[in-house]
Length: 106
Image 1 (cartoon, rainbow, N blue to C red):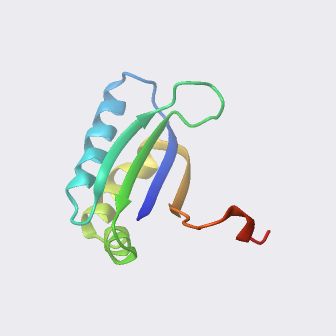
Image 2: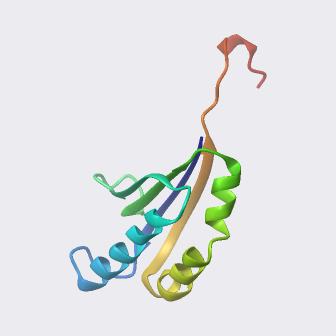
């Protein structure tokens, strides 16, 4: 399972019409084939500068790659990302599986 997470700060305040427009457009990414468990997140503390997050899961690396290269994602980025997002952090990861924690080499 691949987890694709993007945490970001919008250029616009919470509850603004711009926030609503951006998040509604982002939710449409959930309709791209291969996207599982799409979530829109909002920060609940002040521990970092990012106010929102998008979390998507993919069963395989191939479905993740297909999403990254999908034309609808490209359109979303072109139409909304630079105009609405002030800064962001993207994190992609897989679940680690191991039998014994002692077997991990640091």
